[in-house]
Image (cartoon, rainbow, N blue to C red; front, side, top):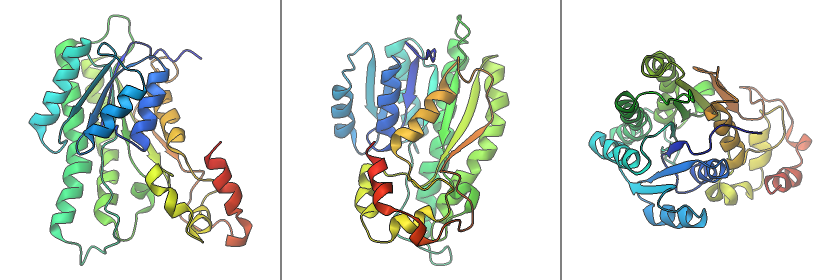
Length: 282
């Protein structure tokens, strides 16, 4: 199916692995020109870009701290110079501190760091992209600019021990519904949407899946008894970013979590953990 993404300039933040890596692979498969961002894992990012076979005309990589407005603006401007313009912005960079910590004991430094990276980082990235769109103007061929943010089901259901993270993902709702009107003022066909992943098995999470009882606990609240792969998230993002498939979709949220609800749907003995693991490799 023709997505209309071919030759578009696509910015992906946090592209060095996990969901970011799957996003890069998916958009490369659609023939996009990729501006791939990392902060700490720049070496891994450049190695991954080489694996994708991105030459200088189709690939741009760089390091930037998304909490630094000047740094992310500089990265975006560098990508615009390399490609002539940027058409798609995927806001994926974020952090999730692993340790559970209730708010009443959570260090203020942790709260500020999570808000700085996940919320302000998203805002500064979108701001930089929109400033470029304001300077470059809409595409002559009518393939409107597109933004897609990567949120989390923590925004919908909360996450005990990770209140700061949940707050940052919840705030994306307000950002989504504000920017959908602002982007259309810069580009009449401009759009913004949000993908909310649930529990997604990235390479770093593989070991956790092998811990007895984890799959049963996670799948208890999902109608579909399986776990998401990074590719599942990337496919939804490609759809929403397509100027053909989703040309009239803006301000919307797609939750990729197997029909997750805030209640238990299955007993542990009704979940086949071995089958869930097998389907991760399909």
